Length: 631
Image (cartoon, rainbow, N blue to C red; front, side, top):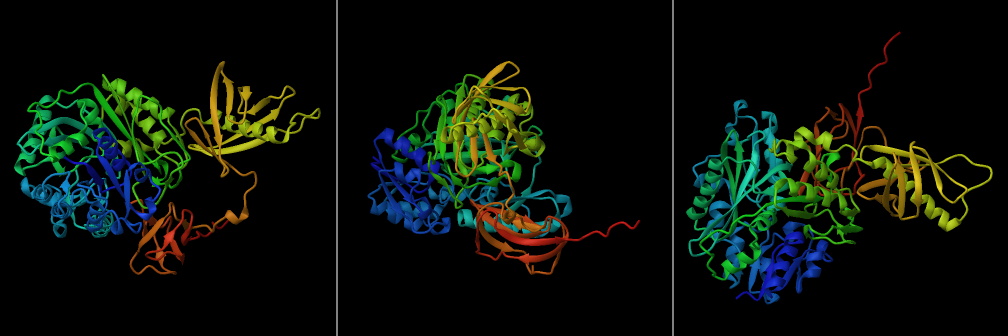
């Protein structure tokens, strides 16, 4: 029997495993990097062991240090979570050789399936030879052989870009998984990403716990997942389940695993088998009424699964909440998560709590919100409303995008589910959310009420000009003009048609078109104001000339590390619009910084290994001036 379990991971998955351990009476051990010293998973564990350093290569990818930590803390089992070393056969062997229970499949099964190249070979599928890719093969996908989560993946549509994308994907994969092997395969445009959840014991029983649809993705990383996958023809679904079961039996699989497919034109194309628990496992748990982590532990202890797979019920949908800005190329965000509050009736899996900091070293996912309902329509409605009511104060997140995605006709009706969803719809999904203008009015009046409370007064017999405040948010700036009234209230002069019912520093009630709405307002010292689901920024009345930057300045879009500069790039070089100049690594992803226009590189402040903060000057490109027309 397992009595003390170490989770060789961090954040949300560590907290999720600890939750099951508490239910089972198993004590827990966390490992943590220096960057995670105060993290939620460390606070929730019964014991914790430091892994010196911050980068994954120094900490969570050091299997030797993790095994030493398990032994030092008296653990008798290790759960790998997902990502990092979860699909590393050598790590699994090291755990077993140390006399610890490995919560996962046999190392031989990991070797057979964890490498996507070897898994394809086992099933008779040959990857493309990078040296022999021709124009007729395009588009192709460069993909990391190890790991997942969209890291180490690049779509190549121009043959001239293949060599650079192979290098970039390999560097990203090595950083994220400790393995830089990549391969090339044909890229199937806009297929559905469908997968099958498996659970196998050591006695030959294999459960195929239905399908999941994970088609809504950005950067090849899943955003919204659901179970069961809607609208699959019965014969195709049966084929997917059968293929998954055969793959598991072929390698003697034990534990939880997932077989992934790309479905296009009524056909299923094998992608990979993930020899671990998946991020999206909660939707399967909700539909089948099981705890996959508890079953993982039971199987590792030698238990037999019942011969019959549990029966499914209803529908479940999960949304991944990220600290990122979808309108700015999905740029990851960092900073203090000042408030994080999710309404009841929602399953929350997270590695953060109010007051925690979101740093630069790891994936920007804050949490997963999952709902279950008797029907898919009910689940869609329930999750969209829960996300709207979730209070998130801090960095920019993708919350508004998630709500808009769930309510988009293509998704809400399951009429067109495929991996091209965001390529088609992103501009429409990142417009200003409804209600941004009255939210700005509420912010302005709450600020005025706070000032009135501090300094008193406000109305005079000789009425002065209107007060003006401007707030920036999704969709642009909103200017608000108002004046105090004799009765201690306020009159809004712009935008028109707004009547103030009540205003205090933290709550404002406004009437528009005969309807009264209430707005909870929280303002922070840095000028950020949260009004319900809206995140606004108070604009200064006067521009600080020190904040101006030279035309053509390339500023760091996020905090991170410069990992590469284009070969031979030097000040004085001519560059063309869109030319890659340098690469930043932040939150386990590599981000390319390109020339904004054709011109001359007049400054270069980036060098490999340099740590930069958001807004740091990286380079300056002086654009070519066109001669003025002669009269």
